Image 1 (cartoon, protein in one colour):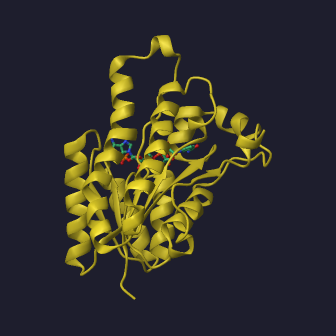
Image 2 (tube, rainbow, N blue to C red):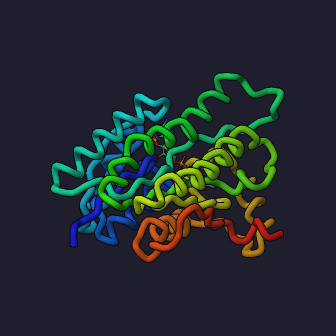
Length: 249
Ligand code: NAP
């Protein structure tokens, strides 16, 4: 069987890194991406040391152009190895907290640019080729904050709620061509970004859910890998809640 290639944005840290490791473990050729070259190369080394195949392509995702450049470079990596870009995980994101009245316009714009505009233009540049080949899988990493009004996370939650809508739009747009599009919606997960941004709120949020504990990045990566894989061939347009049950209470 042909080796699949996956581009995972924001895989220099946290959930993206765990997803890159998991997909590589499952035999997928992985394109690791992020702004930090050093951490990206460390993830590549980690994957290679475990017997997987990985390449680093740096990107600062902030607009249509940066998304198009990353799409072109990741496609080139896949094609130079005789493959194609079969999986896209839109994981890179920034979270900005604070009350609505104190939110700077520049913060609003950068959250929307990284969390919504960049995934939109990555899909615009990658999904048509998947559709032309008759298959592909896209997983958008959303958040519990897209479904629940979490204090101080209005802009971040809104950016991800819009991403969930894109999941459904793209599932409809590309489904007939065999391209599946789903979201994973994590609850509190112990990552460098969440620990820096949420601090003690991470544990407090986790305790509001039936399962009551903070997830590891690997818990979220397992759900992403499921949706990206052929085991989910009849699943598209779904938002998979991976929040310890927080949305049912
Ligand atoms: P993290 O540890 O902060 O990692 C974020 C990743 O995104 C890093 O690899 C970072 O790479 C990349 N990134 C940020 N801005 C970027 C930009 N402008 N261009 C390119 N890459 C960029 O965060 P995480 O907790 O793993 O979060 C991963 C995803 O899960 C996000 O979509 C987040 O919204 C979602 N999520 C997380 C939690 C949680 O509790 N952890 C809960 C719900 C949803 P560089 O630093 O190298 O640029």
